[in-house]
Amino acid sequence: MKYLFSCLLLIISFSLSSQSYCDCSRNVEVFNKTVQNLPVTRNTSDLSAYNKALSAANNYSYSGNYPEYDCFQQMSKILVTLNDRHNMMYSEVGFDVNQSDTTYQEFPEFEGDLDSLKTKLELKPLEDVEGIYSRDGFSIGVYKSEENLTLVNLSGGEEVWQKGEIIGRFLKYGNGRYLAAIGQFHDKQLVNFPLEIKNGHISKLQLSKSNASPDLSSIEDTETYQYSKSGDITYMRIGSFSGYNPVLKNAENFYKSLEEKPVTKDLILDLRDNGGGGDRNSDILYKYLRKNYKNARLYVLINGNTVSNAEQFALRLQKFKNVTLLGSKTSGTIAYELGKTYDFPCYNFKGFFTFKGDKKYLEYESVGVQPEISLDNSEDWIKQTKEYIAKSK
Image (cartoon, rainbow, N blue to C red):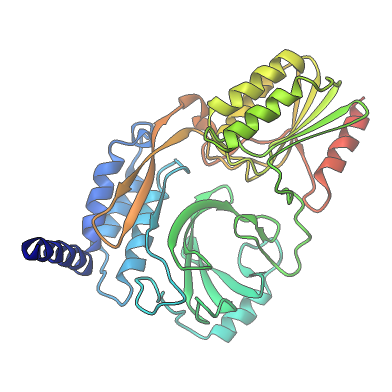
């Protein structure tokens, strides 16, 4: 027993010491080897931007006060060069407000006069991505840093964030799209995810400028699957194509219930905020629509949070006779499929990367599916769609 206890102590001590004396170059090396086997690499003819970011990460000095944060940012800068918005990284460790010894308590501080920055950002027009964004008493300054955007806490979030602390960066994909490389607001866990800044809103983070009009492009209702009928118009909300229970079971029950519903001449199919999933779910709906609505008029609502399999589904529906896409550009996270989680040797970092792709969707990756009819984000989308239907008859 004494021998076993000593072995356990040795293992724990080795694990802790390996994390304590980590160098980001070890993470970058593993990351580079992993990337060579990803489908996006095989589909990319020019890797010069990737190689440039890789070289910068290898040559970066991680001797400052925030090696974990710096490492995550450098690795994210490599990641954003790859045209695959599914890929992401994150840290397993966040900030526990009840403890004082967690890994990511401190992020870098803004170097400069915070009041002057705030005054400058207050003057930015609504359409400028720079400015001050707020939510729930949390005020965040977003300013340009080279070709990317940096986020700084101006006020609020006192339990976790200090005033003047750098929250992270938005790394530019292009087309108004960014890869977030930030600490989560509630616990400082480092995360990646794609987002869009539009009309003074960062909807993924529920952040808005004070002078921005209400954003009605998303759905507030939490019910994933909905059905209603008004005259000759049927409305269906499909909020997820997840292929796993309990969502899949709920979807199957919903699709089965549709068999008992009357088929109308017009169908509004709402795919807003559908985070995707798989064909195991969406194929059931597709077969139902092909059987019952192929010759009807379909009006498909999409927005920037219509993602992955939901984007593919919107394109598949265009095979039908009368289909109109309305809303705004989809996420552009469409051509690849997430695979497994990878462990990095340092700083408790993990990667969640794709394992296969579909070349027929590559033209939409990081670009999104464009609607035929753009809708006004400041007005109710269902109302606008019904008005469009009335005018089209």
